Length: 468
Image (cartoon, rainbow, N blue to C red; front, side, top):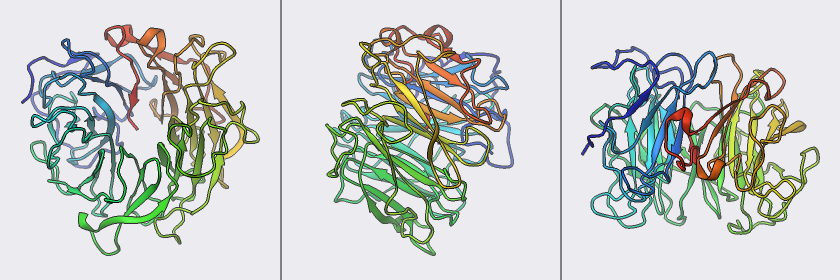
């Protein structure tokens, strides 16, 4: 049941009774108001709502010719038109994804609540679809999710892609013991029933990334958990969800991102094992418990579309600034997009537990350049709050780099870097925007947004999750 508290809307958006009809699907999977600029959804799953600790909230902040600004929409499960009711440890915003599901020309937002109590079952989890429009996120529906049970954590992660090859977006949702695929027609009042396509031999809260690894025009789905990465794909000459099956098994990890790093028209896959000490994947750890990232490149000749071997990066890799230190959490966040506009994507790697002298867990971000031969450590650069031009200063437990997102927020053809530090200023959290240029991420005109900019309470933990 939709709750009665109105969503807070900051900026000059005008409320309308019905969204403008648009003939073609949205050109951008993250343009929620149809103005031609990419927007950014920022999760605060641990925030308190109406006295309910950990109920969770999501901010939608809008792109513009100046990039991201303070203009935003604030959404909880108590917002008018949003299904459900804010509850204790629902963790609304624990995962976020987007795509134009109903083909009306506006991106729609999918929000996971992995702790949500549904059908009277604690921790069952839920996923809410919030519809885009000229005044976005004013209505939505909950995805059907089959049987309920405690600790299911449905909505642990979400990915959107054309998995079945029907030229329409599909949704993949992970949980503690399941992987659901939603393929078919979405309307504002009805979603496809969904099907559990998970491999029963593998359980765990899976991290997801969609990408066309073999270049056939259909997306594959990388499902990453501690012991294995499963690559799902659609069987040849089929479009039904039953034929979406495991095509390849690769080494496991705990974070994942996909994008075209070498400009060959096929997506590549980066899988991080950010915490080898607590989450060993059974392989030799080259990083001395600091964390490492393995990059595999798209290959049309390989089943599943990904080369069986790849490049491995950690802080002792030649050309990467820094040194492997235990529990740095190198790779705790990943993002891939083209920063320089050369049609080869870069990889941003969050290192939120990086320490600077006696300042512990201050955090930073490493950016590696893409090239025709794949990722290179040439011109590798790191960014922290001690980097000249970046507002703030490194402090204990800021965890700068907890989340990263690369997207062209100002429509200049170059992806900008969004970075969060959810523990900044004793748990207030903050979001930084560093602009992309033809040569690198720039530290000129860096923007930072905190609780006052978004009109949220202190201790909200801004940026615990990001659209990705």
